[in-house]
Amino acid sequence: MHLYLSKMIGYLLVFVGIFIVLGTAGADCDGKCMENAMTIGETLAYFSMGIGATALGALFIMKG
Image (cartoon, rainbow, N blue to C red; front, side, top):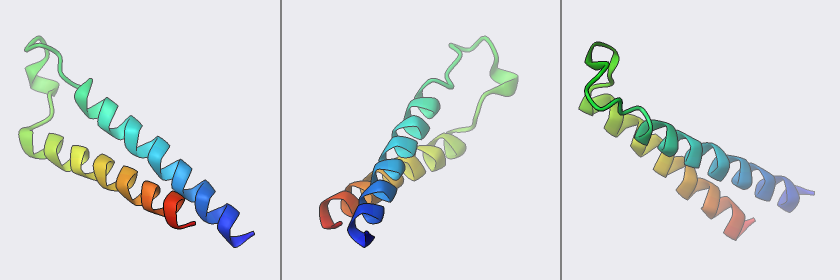
């Protein structure tokens, strides 16, 4: 049961991480909404969180 739960948490982390990265990449509005755009620091922070969640999820899947 522990291995199954570990793999499921891993799959969830990969799923969420990929959507965070896609959401960060899709936040660009080609300069039409610069007053609402994310700063470069925010973009890098969200991108790093998404990559980190995906990597941690992959680790859980492989080791679980």
